[in-house]
Length: 127
Image (cartoon, rainbow, N blue to C red; front, side, top):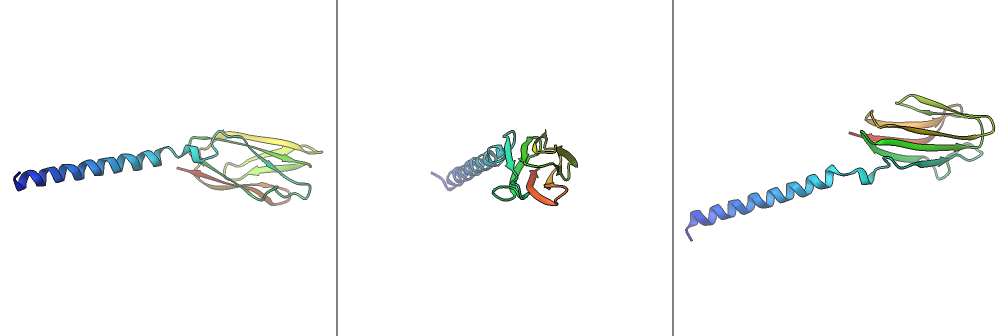
């Protein structure tokens, strides 16, 4: 084989490897929804002292996914999802509130027990 043919085959081989690597990397980045909380109901339980059981819950969504979580509280309180600016009242005697909305704003947000200034959720929305 001539040196030009060897160089051409080597060049084709390099291009094929580059295309395969690119396809594999794009595939692993484009479907990260399995690594998020999108569409899955997450329940945050608040104890009688007003603290989230297990600590501040970290939730992650990709833009366009469904944010879905429920907060159970044994006393009256306002749960406020900051950034999206959605307050919800838990009635006297306790109960729960559920948030269900599209992840439309990118960033890091918190939900807190508004009256107690107690953070219960750190929510990340990726682009």
